[in-house]
Image 1: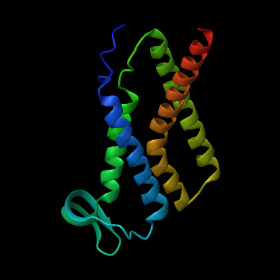
Image 2: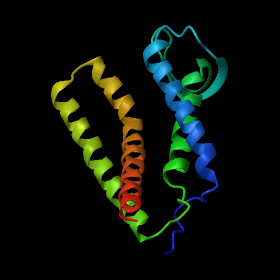
Image 3: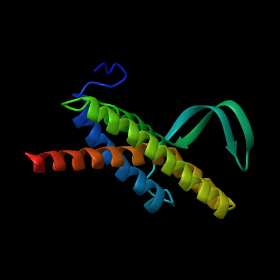
Image 4: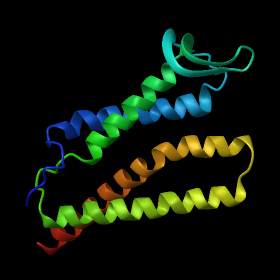
Length: 159
């Protein structure tokens, strides 16, 4: 089966480790580092910067804590590599599970988002949108690997 759209299997291990570490980093940043006690202040170029006291600026250099940007970037890149790397045995069944998991994750992700749109208002909804950037990838990875595990368990029992 042709799988040109998938990354090589060799990416799976390192991206999995980075994915878990960055997930822990995101949890730390979102829930434990709200007062920004851990910072990595760097002067960065910004296309758009909205500093409440200074107003809105375009195409400026600004000082920013880039810890969250680094962790989010590592999470997304490692998550994509982990989710879309070939399995050791990439057959039609794995492709079917991958597709079904992606569809399922999309439905669940937008179901949760729709629920939040209807019942969460104000600034907390901004947090919902921020979390929503990551949930589709997370739901897909969890569902895909759970289904692979279940499929391997069932096939091992049959032997």
